[in-house]
Image (cartoon, rainbow, N blue to C red; front, side, top):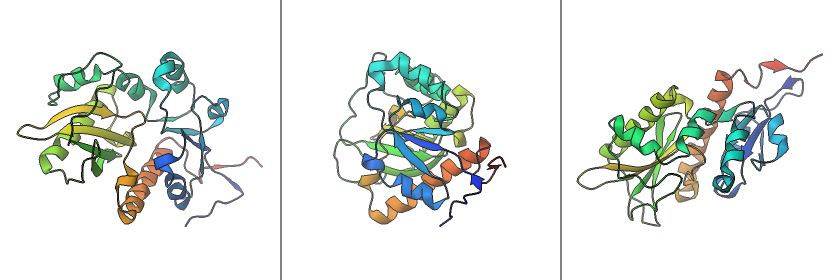
Length: 233
């Protein structure tokens, strides 16, 4: 484990939401020498953070204009504000369809359709496949290559649309339906459930470590490396 040095300024990281299923993220970050705390997205103290990572923000749709304004007020947001603004509207599925990603018919803007029973959520960290879990309480199913390829295509198309590299998406969740023809019916890059508690403890620890590595990489990309900014003398 890396230990925080008192003479070095470490980035002030906020996880926007509450622990819940994500309770293991703070210990995983701490093992990488990154210290974070939970805070509601509308807490004024988030504006003083060096980095804010969106997690459980269930109420943002009821205060959408306020939420979108807030995303552009914090210093550094993961995923970035342009990603959030595009992904918040279900019309993003039309953009993905135009980019060649097979999708199910979209629903009216700002409404979330329930996932088709028995389908899969594919989780990507830094643009790379991480793990999968069945939606709607279905038993675990291992997705085949076709489903993962569909998820990768959706993540790449989304990144291209907003002008970033896939690796800059700290997380993304692609909801897909299999069968004779795989289809995407949702891509959540705002604050999706990542299904940690659906994983066995060993796999969960490994994949949460990958989440922490993704955050560490983002810190370096943003010039927020934990040893990059010493306190003023």
